[in-house]
Image (cartoon, rainbow, N blue to C red; front, top):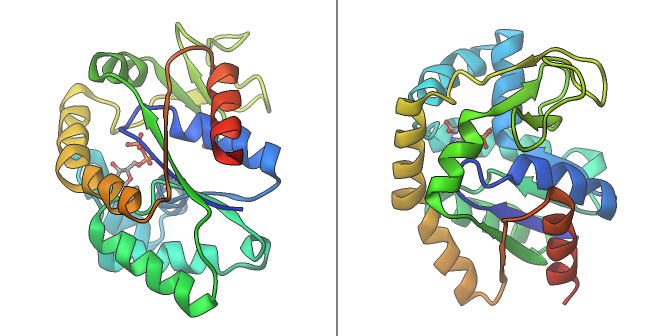
Length: 215
Ligand code: ADP
């Protein structure tokens, strides 16, 4: 299966992508995680991306598209993948179409996670990530780890993202409305869009997603 996940920041894309990828046995490809890995390794790409990310802005397409393509063409992604955070604007959606067409493959579906804006802000403010693995995601109230500051899955240290500040979140939401939302119409026109409400328990949302994708 080849799936794209869309939704506002804080919709739970990372959490759901981790669970969906496991269930469907396909790799979870998150451009946000790839950028964060580059930043923590101090690569030139990471240095360039960091300023945009901390400000809540999209990283320029010239950097993002090449990085996403490199990851998508790795052997583990040959039979399918779940894209989380890519594409994030129409230019990237068109670039993805070209990458897929060149490889003679196509998307099976685009899953849109719908969440009200007040909820998004609450989710982001309490979000904590694991230093070892970006898809181990917790929330201080909604999904607290058994031990404060420690990842339940691997024992890694939990931290708050530098772009999870109020100011950066405001910019991220603006970027989402102006640049990412248009791809929802783009995929709806192609008959690929599947929209589900992303409220409720994490496991309920995963079940809803699997059911919607199988239809
Ligand atoms: P969220 O969806 O919660 O905002 P992500 O981890 O997916 O978080 O992305 C964090 C940041 O990484 C974005 O705000 C943006 O700066 C950058 N980023 C991730 N994916 C892309 C992309 N496809 N294009 C441009 N920038 C991106």
